[in-house]
Length: 159
Image (tube, rainbow, N blue to C red):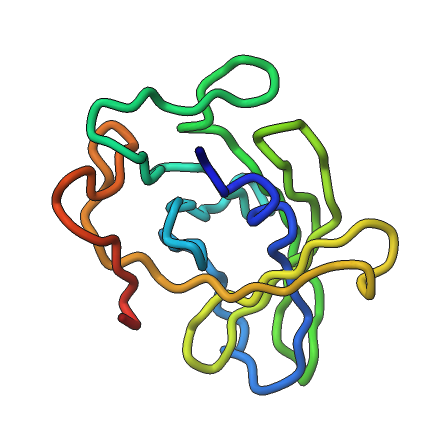
């Protein structure tokens, strides 16, 4: 149903290369599989990510539930704090939650020079993780947390 789960859980990074300075990665982000939109916003001195859009298989499909039985829509699935990254840029480190099974992973995120969010999630050591790139979400705020229903494909600002 929803691939946000491990996709999100294994989503945070510390990749080499130019960084987007110290700008925080706030805003709405489309996951690589285009199946979810995550809103990243300040929560105190940290950044938190909340599921605000989910691609469903049909317009009448029910919203997926999290491991504890509550709706995935609106769940806060990541919380990160700023830290110094490569070349003086800010990185954010913290935790990310898999909404399907409740697993919590360590996480690191940075913006690249093209303002794409590089995410790396891992267990224990960063070498045991996976990196993904999320793109800024260009669509309207998902009504009722539903992405594109029958309106066509979900797109990022980068295509």
